[in-house]
Amino acid sequence: MLSLKLWPKAASAETTLHAELVRHGLPAEYARRTADELADHRADLLADLKGDGDAEATVRQRLGETRRLARQIAIAYRQRSWFGRWPLVTSLFLAPLAFATLWLAVSFATAAGLMTSEGLFGNGHAVDGQTWRDATIAQRYCTAVALMSSFLLPTVFAWKACGWLLRRSLSRVAAGIACGAIAVLNGCFLHQTLPCPDDPTLACNSIALFVGRISAADQIPWMVLPVAGTQVAIVLATGLAVLWHDQRRRQQALLADDGAAPEWAIAA
Amino acid sequence: MAYLKPPGNLRRMSNRRTNPDFLNGVPELVVLELLSRRAMYGYELVQAIRERSGGELTFGEGAVYPLLHKLEERGHLASRRVPVGGRSRVVYRVTRPGKKRLAETVGEWRRIAASVQDILQGGEHAIAKALAEGRIR
Image (cartoon, rainbow over all chains, first blue to last red; front, side, top):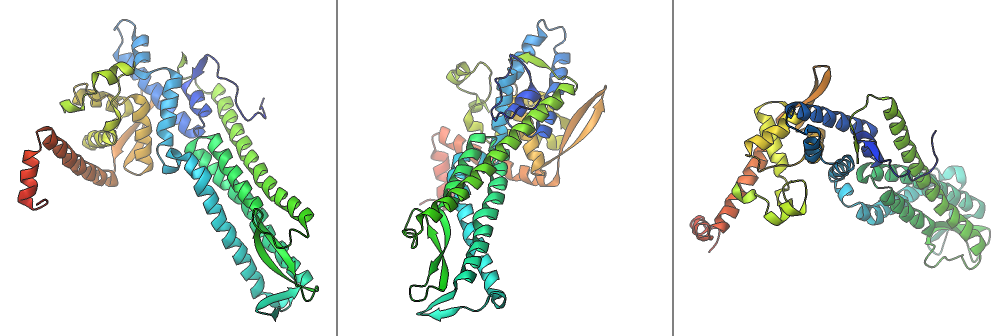
């Protein structure tokens, strides 16, 4: 029976190395291989110690308790990559920085793409060095750019970045923090359509920071808040989906382990 | 390598004897060196480390297997499964990039070990050598 709980129950007193490695978040295949190799190692050690009094106790002393051994292996696994060694730096700084860069790149690329097909939407009017478009067309531009950079990109980025960080750091806390930071940032970046002060039928698009000055916010705060809220919520929902997916993966690996040939089980 | 012995207080702090933090990088060097001589499986390798170091180096199984997997992922080692008595063993061998990496690590280790040795001997020999080579004035 698969539980929807994000955090697993406390491990039972009797456990296997594979189960402990999976609980630490190691990929199922890696956990299986390491557990198999250590089971083989243990069998060789026992065979070597045959006739040496309490061989089991010696083996336990050499290999250590199952949970301790699993923790040691998980730490060594995390140490393999820089991101695994510094999960908080990655979550709090690198992931938001990468997201902000991509957000700007996607926004400008989408806007540039739309401008190249300007004939489809109609030409802009230059007034005082500023290009104004028909208000309906400007709104369409804004919606298209916002859909790409504030909804599609954050969903894909949060899914990939959180999953990637989980695989490297094995830390759901780090993945959750990264997701939260991306969500806050996504909520702060807003696309807006500003009406032309001289001609209300014309408008132009701009990028604004929710935390800073929003040109039209004093006029449309009721529109800005739900949009920003949705931008935050979409990333948080994606992050929760990643964590749930990871929990399911761990549970499925543990369920698969129940049917596998038993390796050693030590009271941990 | 007597100076690699962990101090007594470090031994007392842990109920399982493993080597101290300043041996970072040494497990990789030792594993690559031993596997470059002949292919081995995990247990054989751990035993070889103990025997060849006279029991001074004990990295612990929890460190050796992840290290083998890391080196394999980086392409420094290659593995194959060998069936033995109804079980399947993973035997590791050093690849060409692994041999290159080993040569670099050995060179680095020799330089560091020689420098530490010079310092432990009082440093006069190192100063004289550096003066002769013009590295210091």
